[in-house]
Length: 123
Image (cartoon, rainbow, N blue to C red):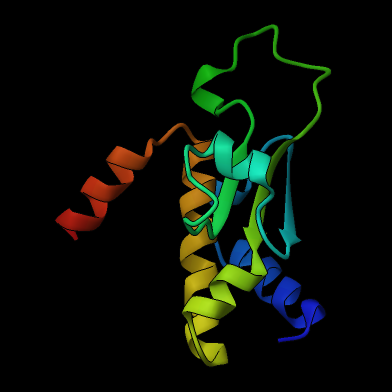
């Protein structure tokens, strides 16, 4: 898939979020990158052979104090090549982009991976 189309699907996933979430996404950039760097994998606690589809880097809203300010934006990175390697067809890729964007935004709101797994199981 062309990068421009993939980025459009990421932007659409954000635009499709409920207003109450989009309005609270404060000081955050969302970017697309081909693949995670070795540093990003290490930060996520993964080995080079493991797959990472998205990554949140920053200070979750639940951990920000009144003195939070004058800091670089938090960053959500969506990794295009691992998503395309795992999913075929635009519909499947779009669905996975939506899932990964929501997952990483949940981290921005302070929701842990363990809690997200529990929520998925409870669905």
